[in-house]
Amino acid sequence: MMSACCWLVAAGCLFFGFSIRCTCYLIRWLEISNRPGYVPAREGSAAWLPVRPSAAACRAVLLESLSSYLLLVLWLAGLLSRCRPSRRRTVAAGGAAQPRPAAAPVVVLVPGYLMNRGTMWVLRWRLRRDGYQAVIFEPGSARRPLAEHARRLGEFIAAALPAGTPVFLVGHSMGGIICRACAADYAPPSHPVHGLCTIGSPHGGTIMWSFGLGQSARDLRPGSAFLHRLENRPRTCYPVVAAAIFSDFDELVIPNENARFPGVDALPVSMVGHFMLVLDAGVYRRLRPLLARAAADFGAAGRPPQQRT
Image 1 (cartoon, rainbow, N blue to C red):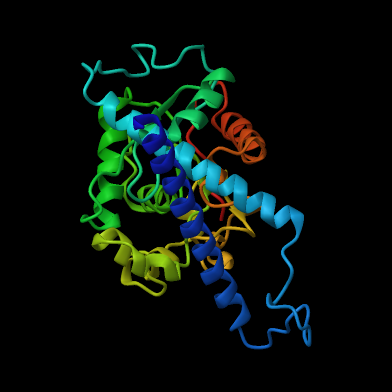
Image 2: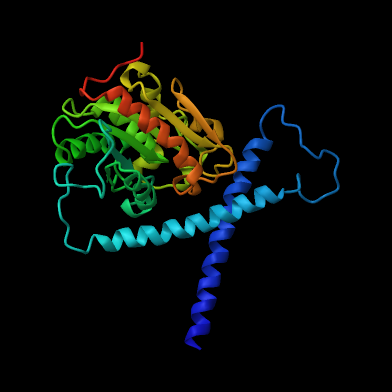
């Protein structure tokens, strides 16, 4: 009896999560279909759906649902990891399993809205497997404004890494906006930023902000004062190696075009959902050349980062 109840609860959770995911994609479709000049692909069709979903789209929705469940498990594991005695780990103390490539910056990972370190473990594992050192910064309470998160990220870098250590900032979703703000305004002078990559980050805001809570969500509103300040920051505030990875199938950054970071390299991926972005091997393959370019920019002599004019 107990086993049957557990299976029913699990099935209910899976159905509920899948329903939420489909609702997000429905909101995304409504945004697209209400754009000026939109022409339905099957105009005049008697089908009850505006367009018949392709096999690739159904597969992408299923993978996105599964990835959200996996991130939930990782989030819970990250939460439980706080209960264990922690050891302060820095670059000097050997924070990575392997020696990093020569002159490679330390990668600082920042998770998204309401996420914790556990959701970045897969990406950190891939980085360490390739010999990079990676540390994770947790933004914390969503009640704080994004500017405060960015300032705390700068303080974290200064405290966790030895002076003079070059860094490469990688942020998923809201974490990418925090990385961008930190690189522009709060990066510690003792830790030069040699690279910046955002993954599925709403640089132009997202209409899904209204489903969030706290000042962090309000700062992601399209046209917010915080995003307006970021838009007015010159390109020279950011390192030469800067890019934005974004998807045409993102159900939380709506419209999808708002995930573009004006003035930096645009690296689009197709049929990858918002949560799948941080788990997808193809996204990581887009990130690896950026790390190599940042290492080349730093150089064996540890020269200061160049800025693009």
